[in-house]
Length: 275
Image 1: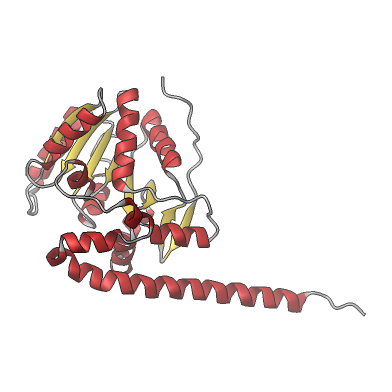
Image 2: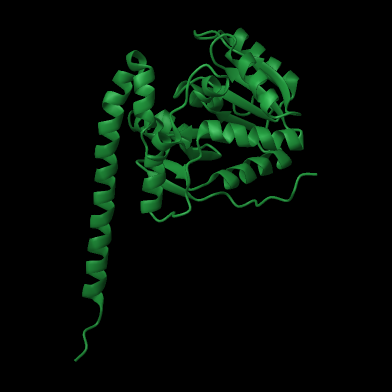
């Protein structure tokens, strides 16, 4: 029996126009489980500095994030900013960690999983790895789509295949921003109550790629580890994301501090004088 869950939506904090959920892993699990219980259809964006910066130059992507049921802070910079902006209980909700925790919960509750994405064979390897780690985990199906635009007939066939499997959770591993676009465009077409975009978590949990050491993850240095692992693919991305995010976030904090300073100054000026 599914326990009663809170219906209150987690708070959001505006980080450069993206409304990031001020959340932690237990609250994320509670929220997702409430959607499954109520058969609400929602999608989850797991977003770090990359997603926020892509949203600076792509208004549609920013809207997709802001219409998501949850936008979890995938990287420590978003956690730090959320805390600075008054949400002290915010913790990192990292894609692989959410996938592990929700798989463990699903094995107990009987929630059915569908894995969509990854290179050929990755979704199957992911399914095998997770069913070994979490006995009783029900996998409704797997599908690795071709790396090219799909025809409308192909897309309709994929939707039909996923819906026929009757999953409760569809995990989407297509990388940012492709997976966010896919979830938004399939909202209302996929019957499952939950879609979650987890990107590289497919490769990590399938054992295809190594994860950064915990000390690097906790100190916001995972990007450096991944850059060392895949320099040809990631150098151009991080060359603009890291300095761009630092500059934009610093500017945001300075503007907010200045606004708060002037607001306090005006309030003091409006206070009646005595005598």
